[in-house]
Image (cartoon, rainbow, N blue to C red; front, side, top):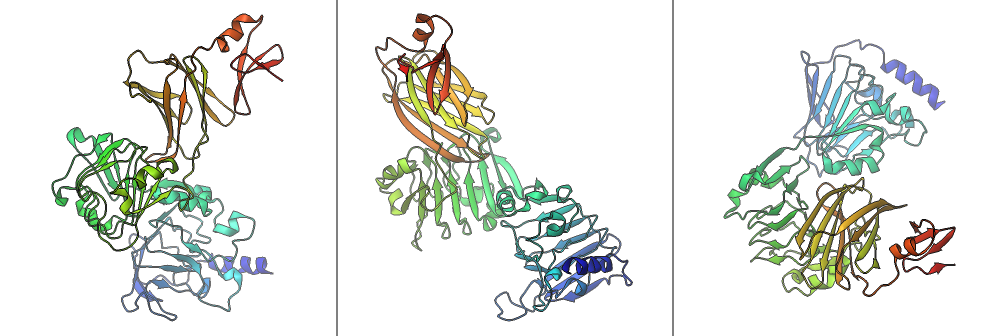
Length: 506
C-alpha cells in the first residue's frame, strides 16, 4: 500500500506547476528570494526566532509537514538552490519534483534534512529535499559532519528509494577534504565525491618553501619540509586574516620546527596535530588558545619547547596524545607533563599501530616487513644505529615502490635494498649493513598530511654467522627460494623448508 501511495504522490509532484514561484516569501523561520532570470532560489534564516527557543519554532527551520506543503515542489523554473549560513533544517521533499534543478548548496550550519513536522504523516511523506529531481547534478555540503537524514525509506533495499535518484553515482557530492571520511562512513559514498576548494591558501618562507590553506570547515593545514620560520608578531602570520575561523590546526609531515607565534591567538582552535618529523616548537607558538584542549603529537622524539610554546591559560584539562612507546618520555618532560599525556588508543580509536617485523638474516642483512595501512599514501622507514654513526631513510609509495633513499649519516656507501610484496603488505631487505651493530628501526605510515600509524623496534645484525641464505643456495644441489610463510622467512628447496640459518623446519 505504501509503494502504491508513493507512486501516486510522485506522479502528482511531477506534474507541471500551475502557478509560477513568487520573487520572495517566508516559510517556517526561513526567508527566501527567487531570481527568475537565473533560476536561483536563495533560502536564508529569519531573525525573529532565536536558536535556543524551546518550542515549535527555531531559527533557520524550513518546516514542512509533508512534501505537498512545500512552496517549491514541482517548480521547474528553479535551476539552483543556495541555502545560506544559519539555516539548520530543510524539511521533507522541499524541492520535490523540480525537474530542472541542477545544484543545491547546503551551509556549514545544516544539521537535519528531510524532516517532516507533521507527526501524523505516513512514513512515505518523509523524503530528502531533492527527491524526484531528475536533473540534479551537484550537491554541495560545507558541513564538517553529514547531516541527520529523516528519511522513512532509509531501510528499504534500493538506492532509488533511499536517495530519490535513479543513479546517485552520477551526482557530484562536493565536500571539504576533512569531511569526506565522515560522509563516506555515513553512507554517502553512493555519490561521486569531489573536493571543495580551500577558502584561502598561500605560500610563505624563503623561496615559498611552505604552503598553507584554510578550508570552509575551519581547518588550517600547514605543509612543507624543514623548519618553519619564526614570526615576530601575530600579524605576521600568513593566515592571520582568518584567525577567527580556524577550529583545527594540522602541521603536515616533513616539518621539523613550528615557528614562534605561529598559531598564537587562534582563539577558536579546538585541536591540533603535530607530525612525526617535529623536533621543536618556538616561543608562543600556541599561546592564547583557550579552546585548544587536544594536541596530537606524533613525534618520535620529545620536541623541545620555547617559552610559552604550549597553551598556558588554566581553563581546564588539555590532553596530549602520543605514541604509546613515547608516553613515558613525554611524562618525564617538565613542560609537556603540565598537560595530561595520553597514549594513542585510549581516547583516539582511529589511530592504530602497524604490526611490523624486523629480523636479522645474517651478518649484514636486515629484513623488515609491515602490512598495508588503510589510508596510507606512503611509508617512511628510518634506520639509525644506536651509536649515532649511521642513519638511512627510505620512502615507499602505497604501491610499494621506493620514491626516496637518503643517507643522512653513514661512514660508507648506502646498503643495497630489495622490495617484495607480502601477503598483507610489504617487505624490505637491506644488505650491506655493518655486522654486529644495533639499529633502531622506525616505520611511519602517512596519509596526505599526517602520520596515521607508527612502529619502533631495536634489532642487531648477527655477528659470526657461518650459515645463511647464500650458504643454503650454494651448499645444496638445486635452487633455493626464499618465501614468507606465517610471517616467517623460510628457504624452500626440493620440497623441504629451512630457516634462514639453514636448519630444516619439520
